[in-house]
Length: 180
Image 1 (cartoon, rainbow, N blue to C red):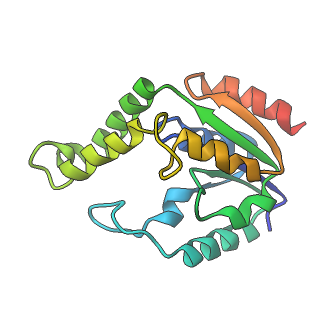
Image 2: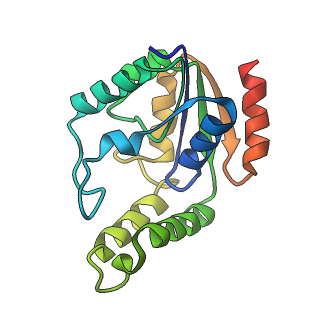
Image 3: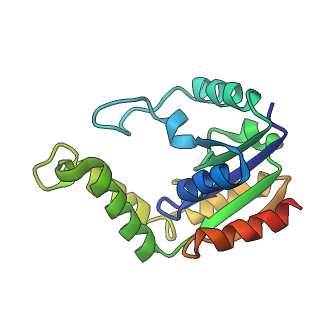
């Protein structure tokens, strides 16, 4: 099992995957994104969840292959079994306007006209944006700031809150200091 596991979590569009990839590149950590384990490969994507036990099995297998890993994305309601492995937890925060702007750009790059009115992913895209925008005001019944506040009480490792609107280099420097 990995000896150093950094977990980055926060609202969709806050930059968890971007920061996770960046850490992997700059610090030599194996990068893992929870979406790759959570969702089955479908077309359109992100419509069918993988079985929880299989997700965890896949993640444990990948963690066993490395000494250092960074996991980006939410593990709330399914990944508590991995919490004892975390050596550092990073909560990435960004305001709703910035997050939605990023998500629209990302979805446009990935799916093009499929998310336009009449496209096969239009409804899913609109539902996703509405869900993502509710992060700050949502309750414990959904992935929300309140849900993350509650979930992070389970964390036993060092916890740091980072500003997802800041440059990657600045957040990397804060993380380096935490790892010393």
